[in-house]
Length: 115
Image 1 (tube, helix red, strand yellow):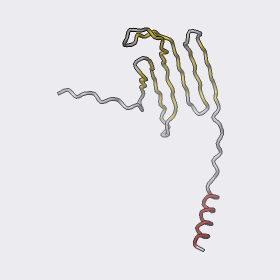
Image 2 (cartoon, helix red, strand yellow):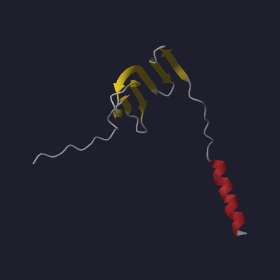
Image 3 (cartoon, rainbow, N blue to C red):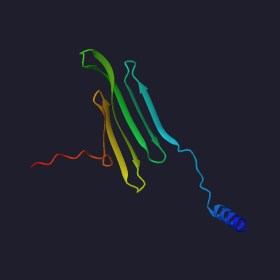
Image 4 (cartoon, helix red, strand yellow):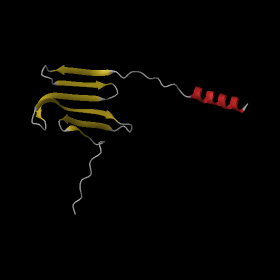
């Protein structure tokens, strides 16, 4: 009997929770350009305020054996509004030295103290 009462109470609570209507987020703007040499440019913006812009260009880089290799150097940024309503902007570079993002929400490496 207790199980039936608990089950009915659970059903009543679930039925009382309002249904959240979800819909796909619309893309307001999108562009993509491709360079035959390997570079590119793209950007987009969505209805919920997310934006991204990225540019890639081919660069020749020497490896540790001094062999030249083409790499794509990527520079870009994206922005969104965080859960507290604060706008966040992240700028980044990705190249032969790795991915390097910068922004207020990206933790900073501690600076050595001077003694």
